[in-house]
Amino acid sequence: MNKKAIEMGFNVMFAIIAGIAILGLAIYGTSRFIDTGSKAVSTATSAKIISLLDPLETGLASGNSEQINFKKESRMFFECYEDENYPFGRQTISFSEQTIGEKFGERGGDVPIYNKYVFSRNMVQGKQFNIFSKEFLMPFKVADLIIINSEKYCFHSATNEIKKDVENLNIQNIQFSDDLQNCTGINVCFGVDSSECDMVVDGCLNEGCESGYEYGRVSKGIDDLYYTDSLLYAAIFSSQENYECNLKRLMSKFNELSLIYIDKIKIIQRKGCRGDIEVGLRNLMNKANSLEGSKGIKDLAIIAEDIDKANQATTSACRVY
Amino acid sequence: MKIRKANKKAQLKGKQVSWHNKAQLKIQEMAFFLVAIMLFFTLVGLFVFSIIFSNLTKDASDIAEDRTLSSITNLADSPEFSCGEPNCVDADKIMGLMQNNKYENFWPFSSLKVLRSSGFNKNESDLIKCTIANYPDCELFEIYDKNVDNERTISNFVALCRVEVENTYPYSRCEVAKLVAGTKLKIVGE
Image (cartoon, rainbow over all chains, first blue to last red; front, side, top):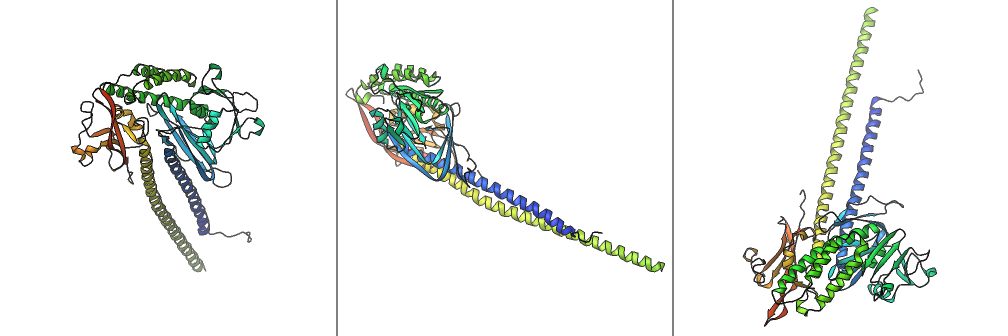
């Protein structure tokens, strides 16, 4: 018999096995508990971010801006579904922040957004998030475009009108430069195509439009996004997926608003108002309904301009909007 | 000698039996102890979870109320309501909005109403609801009401304007009104 062997009674062996099992369960339970807790916090943060977007509704102003700062590096994830929540579609936002080291915590639950149009990349990361809003008119106000970004942008060869627009909104992360060498961050070139440009904005100068960028195209490598009016900013700061989906949501909102305006036209006609924008509005509704992608947005803008002229021609009390 | 050997064998067997019984008892004790510990920690865990989740429900209600409050201050200036002036609601547009039940899933409210000043001091059952037939001789524009339990309402004073006609001349007539929005409060266990 080997006398040097350690003698281990049944009790000791049982205690070791049971101890390992209990400790294992406790560690697993604690880690699950921490994960659930961080997921709950991230989900609550997403819901609070949506509330923070409410003051960005422009009302009668043309734009608004704010910054959201986090203590830790954070990520916001946006998804857009134009076919859900008929007819308005919906977006979702979820949030996660850095925990230990470079590792990000578990992504919180998706919080739905029904009444906002958030234009951004699919994932925005940073400690400081720049948010601004611009109203979208077609020809009446359809909604506020809320644009979220966290990176530095450099607008090269932008027109004075665009400079004024950005300066009025007090957007801190957009730099203007006429020399690409002085640019840092993402280079957005207006009317200039160079290998240093991350995206190129083409306007309508050749077609004789007033400011040069009332409608046109934003080219991002293989993606081309077509814009009119304030959709220019949405096209610059968002992914193609997000832009096209939100554009469809905007068209659905336009259709519902048009129905409200058509009902209003009937009511004010009984009061002696004579205006004829109903035909034009129905025509624009049909076009908006059949809009496949952003490429057709310019045609809609032309019809909207005619409707606006007809509306402005009536007396102020009889204007539909 | 044979009897002694037999006695010794019997004694050894007896010792083995009692050792066996003691070991079984100890295993049983240990098993009961472990079950008790597990039960204790499970109960503590459940207690902690119930406290945390009751806070979560409260947080969810608070966030929903915050959203209602922050949304209602901007609602009058939204395209569906705005008359073109700040904090001014277009009554003619509301009549159109009332025909459209799709907006129930657009705003974060459980109910949305506009109350004209003539109805401020009346019970809800006494108010004359607006329809195409009786407009503008009515008091309550019910845009939608999901009829939820545990609803808290928040209201905001607005100007309510509509097109009127005098001597064949159309003009905009305004009065004070209240924009009333409801939030469903979440209750633990619902």
